[in-house]
Length: 71
Image (tube, rainbow, N blue to C red; front, top):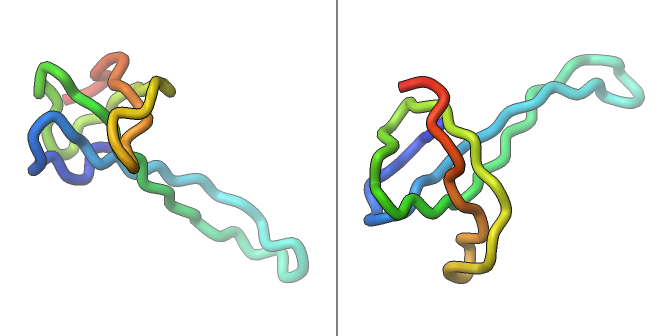
């Protein structure tokens, strides 16, 4: 899900997944942020997108938008 799109041609996308703690067996929700290149600037905050790995665009940006799933 797109968290922030304030920078030109850059989206910050946050993904979440659940995993079980190895000792306590409690489920924990983990989050990870990706910096995604959006050449056409078509995605907005709250959109669900699919992105793929690509050549480095900058120090942190190594992903490219593939398609917008939900607006």
